[in-house]
Image 1 (cartoon, rainbow, N blue to C red):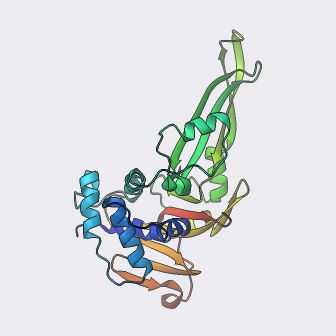
Image 2: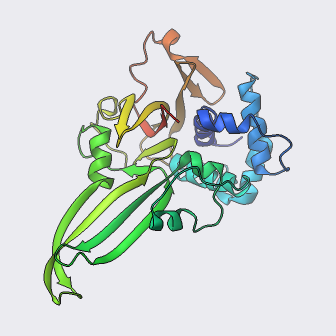
Image 3: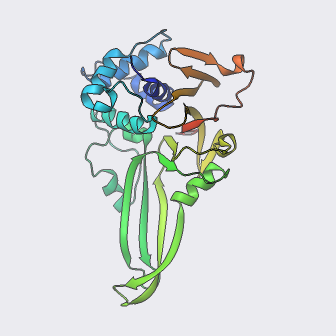
Length: 289
């Protein structure tokens, strides 16, 4: 079917998302479109069918986004974001289950297409720039997106990496238009909403990093506890070449999904020590939801 290992790995990650499973299992008679084809694949794999060929699904994706029509290797993270955006276009609208601040709620609903895909995968973070002297807010910016991109400089814990990048406060000097003087400004960044399923992508391929140490099986972000359940791996020199596989967790056991092959890692290797090795996209799910 072409160089579609990146798509195979992504689909395995989505199909093993617990809350997406819950939603798909209650869908009945959805309209004939790309989301309908995805639901069909999802249910067939859940029913333990062997050798599911997603030909129709890939053809429909190609009609929606030429990235999936080229038959060439693609960046799995970019393709995952495109796939989620395509699926959400065909998913029924949904009222948010979450509470937001005044500005956060406006930002969350600004695209007027809020749905279940957003509820499961989308997070919100914001940046507020304030004069420390007069407390005048100069800029307030909210961003909704599928997951986080982290740039790893050392073998620091992933919680520290995320907090340093997205949950921090920086100060600098600039002229305040209200005070008409040079003042200290505070730029506060924070994740204001954590999704049910948190996608974390390594921003660039780096050598000599111990991803086993960085990406823990369980993390806690501002009292949101997450368990690692899927890792999209990349093998090769660049993200647009080489090969993609996935490690996914099902019924408390880890499996390697390599195109048409599936391995129980605890049977083959007698351990699950190298799940995070060569990881490119790491997906966590909330332990309580």
